[in-house]
Image 1 (cartoon, rainbow, N blue to C red):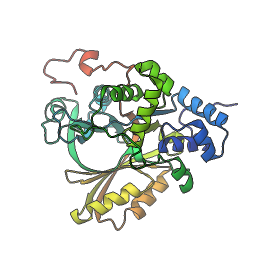
Image 2 (image 1 turned 45 degrees about the vertical axis):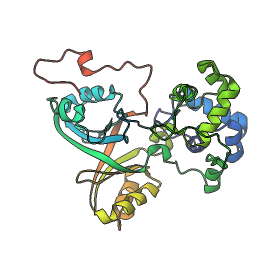
Image 3 (image 1 turned 90 degrees about the horizontal axis):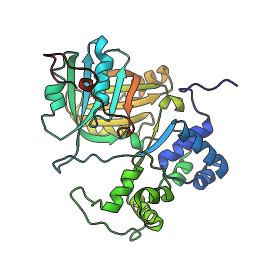
Image 4 (image 1 turned 90 degrees about the vertical axis):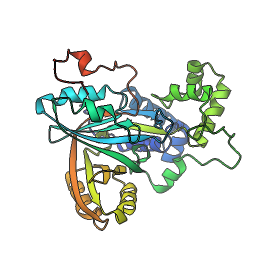
Length: 354
């Protein structure tokens, strides 16, 4: 039998399991089997296979916390480079822990990235390092002002509404969760909680027994605290999967100009659209940024020509992603963070690497 290629679409059953994990990253095989009409043994076997070959990863979605204690901030970066230097700049950006997302578009000389930063700061990457790099021909930066939709909340549309309702995490009953003392970010992460979150960062499906082995805390304590964090909405998981495996090979970045009195409504309309996995109000002339998955170019055209109408959008620029370089909330702990300067000596007068 011919082996499926690494980017071929998963079976419908596997896609539905991925969607179940999007609803609840720590769902048990028994619960998923009951809702999806499968046997627990089959669910365990398929989940193991999807995780073993790296097709699907469930991680803890981080909450960005700035160094100065103020609100978190992030920048959208649009970087154009000399064509022969694209891979060099991409590698340097990918090695940075403050850049969680990097995409290369079909133009062949353009990079889209997100950089974590402090609001209003003169970020060294934007103000000094990238401008002084001769390979960079242009740089646009926009501050994220408001989040309408995050990738961690996007849901693959292969489940029915009742199935999603049965899989989504239930809200805690009043008084069912112990209170946690508020800290500078709303809650205090004590040593136990932080050790559990650290252990779950790269694999949010670790069992209580595995967490006990890693942290040294009693299993009953681990179970209780995990349940508490989940019920309080403070343990947010995210499913990392190549959208091509979900039958969605086209990803488009959208830069939109929206009249101020339509901005909130347009942003919410995008957030509610099943194709959109990211939507943000930003600074700059393109005051609404979005990212969406599509099964083909015809569906993308229909989205642009039909679904965006009536939202007060005066201009749309569409960029199609050709290569996803970095799409993980966390750096790979097994991969050394090499910069361009570390991989080869910088030539005199070229300035700092990205």
